[in-house]
Length: 182
Figure 1 (cartoon, rainbow, N blue to C red):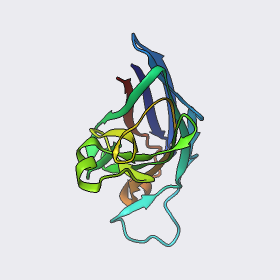
Figure 2: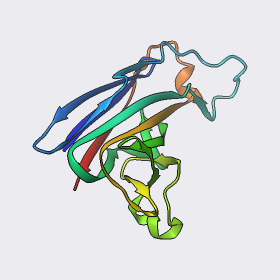
Figure 3: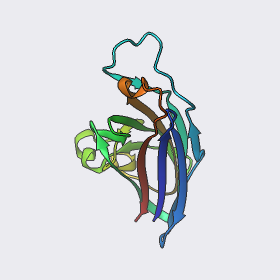
């Protein structure tokens, strides 16, 4: 099992850092980009109200999960929740979307195991949050393989009220992704 800690930091600027650690298992995760920096963020011009959220730009990271043996691969997301999404700072959140999955080079769908009976198949793009387990799917069943590659899209949102301060603020959230092959 491999753990990948994704730490988002906002100095009025979010960043994404991942440091995979190999544990006593046969699968590991690597990411295409271990640091995403949004830079210093200003209160959006034209936003006079202090209610609502300011959505930062979407960022995409390629996730590679590789297992030594042919396996039914599961990705498990862990972290704090806010409004059914990953918590980001005190009041913000990060939406997470997984898409364009390939298992051993062939396209596969994605699903939460509890949804397999309801939908009968995986989907190309799936919203996820901490607490979710995600599996690659073929023909309505969890697929087996050695190498899972997919896109992980993150979109942070922070309250407008947090962006009006002249002081530098740091917004953080933490997401851990475990990969398990059985």
